[in-house]
Amino acid sequence: MSLSDSFVTPMSNCLAPGFTFPPITEPGMPNFVLGCFGATFAGINYALQFIPPTPLNLPDIKPPGIDIFLQGFLAGIKLPASYPGFSFGPLVIPAVGNAPYAYDMSGELKLMAVCILLPFKLIEKLITGLLNLEINIPTFEGIMLLFDQIALDVGIATPSVSDFGGCLAGSIAKLFTALI
Image 1 (cartoon, one colour):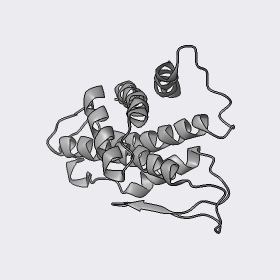
Image 2 (cartoon, one colour):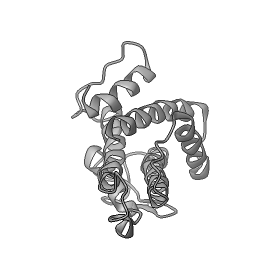
Image 3 (cartoon, rainbow, N blue to C red):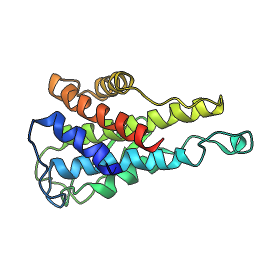
């Protein structure tokens, strides 16, 4: 199973039995999943340079900036030509184009923020563990709890978002396990 399959297959199985993603060049969910994968993979790629932890590379370990995750997400997603900006904590998604916008994207931007902040927080926790010479692979339950907390913090915690969080949590857990 390829790394992308270890992420995408669990998400497609979570969404519906027999569901297949449309081509990745199509706007919508395939693009969003690719953005989630990009943000997660960017963070894991950053952390892999410190694994396995040794006393020789400990002094250089530092948490990554949020921009690594934002750029990874934006590299994978196809967004409208014009959308408003969004900021939450350390994350700033810059506005693109001029108003008026085609439709209200606040929900999508909030979900994007969750999908960028989630791997950011996971990698931050992984690096904190590495500083203690521990490798903490996140569990499904831990990822889901963090997803729910971030979703609640940005104001989008609903049962349907939590269902998506389960898909994302399972996929991230499988991706971490496959990579580490």
